[in-house]
Amino acid sequence: MNNSLELFLDMLSSERAASKHTLSAYLSDLSQFQNFIQPTPLHLASETQISQWLDHLYHTKKISASSSARKVSTLRQFFLFTVNENIRQNNPTLKILPPPPKKSLPKFLNEDQTLQLLKAAYQGHSPGQISKLPFKTIRFILMLEMLYATGLRVSELVSLPLSAKNPFEQWIVVKGKGQKERLIPLHKNILDLITQYLPLRQDFLAQKGRKNSPFLFPSDNAASFPTRQGFAKQLKKLTVTAQINPKNVSPHVIRHAFASHLLSHGADLRSLQILLGHEDISTTQIYTHVLQKHLEHIVLNHHPLADSP
Image (cartoon, rainbow, N blue to C red; front, side, top):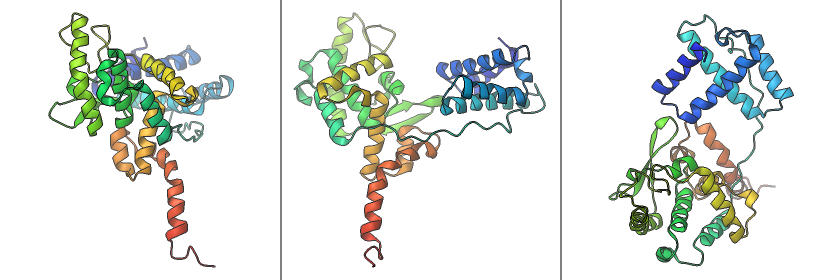
């Protein structure tokens, strides 16, 4: 591996607590760029070479504007690091601009569809009767309910440690991107489900010959938890029972539903930003589309001049 690249990845890991997924993405982007500019060393790349690579990706490889923007961000951070570490004297990315991203509204389910999906998960049982269902079904029900009740990223949900839920508190502690912690309150229905779930969880572990697991949602594998892909697959199957188009449903769509429905019931953007774990409120602002009709109603019906000729 290129020495400057190795130093950069070490910095991300040690100083910014970057996840393995993040480190892998940086390594992939920078390795692709290195292959494009060979034999020029990565840390000596010019502004022209960077522009040529991005043009090649966007117009020849037809990558999306958002992917192109991510690669620009990767290059900026890498070359800023090389300047700060005196590996090179100038930053060739200062004048580089990514193509403008297309603004698209997130997909989300309306409240009736979401409740329809949740109802289907119980397979005709009431929330108080879940002990009659197989453990993996119960585990999926709680995960789905928590996803909609908290707006967690699916990666945060499946890997929740058992310690995230203090038995004497009405909230969970979630470690998000960059290992940043945030507190998310749980409503009574979720707390009741967790109370029912925990003894069933212990029975499941005992059947597997295990005393405990560090994860709230243990899997058959002693050292693991359900995968994101496995949860998404279960969710797709549920949409058939709920008579909802599977193309319109994913774990991230449920996260969008959480945000959109909170906003429509009066939540403010700042609070939503904290709950979702967004570093920048501009990321949260995409959900304001749900307020459009409400704002139109306020202006058209309550402005002093609304009825003026």
